[in-house]
Image 1 (tube, rainbow, N blue to C red):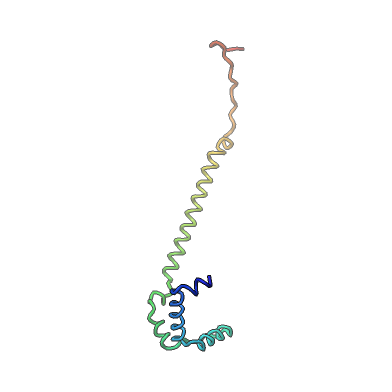
Image 2 (image 1 turned 90 degrees about the vertical axis):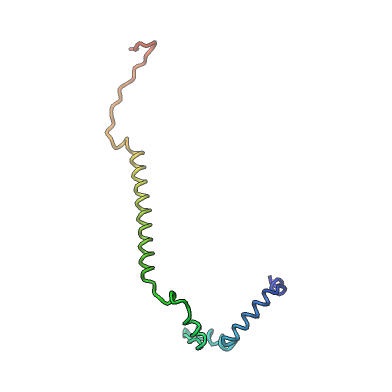
Length: 122
């Protein structure tokens, strides 16, 4: 894998683009500040140009999405209840078909008489 990374020009071009982006965002010093702040549990405010870029993010991402949460929860509950009802109906049908004879009172059977040549044998 390392040989492929060293030989492929696309990897080198991507590494140069990422390096330039890191330098633009503050370079090694900013990276170390962020790592140290994260280790200490602190939050570092982004530089003004980064904050400006972050503020231009889609407004959809700035909402709390209460309606979507309620609708998805209601849909999940509906699906759960429908699957539960389906399982219960299947169980009821299975019990009705398989255990129907045991639910009714047993009826005495009449013994069959054997016939020989169309005449009953005693």
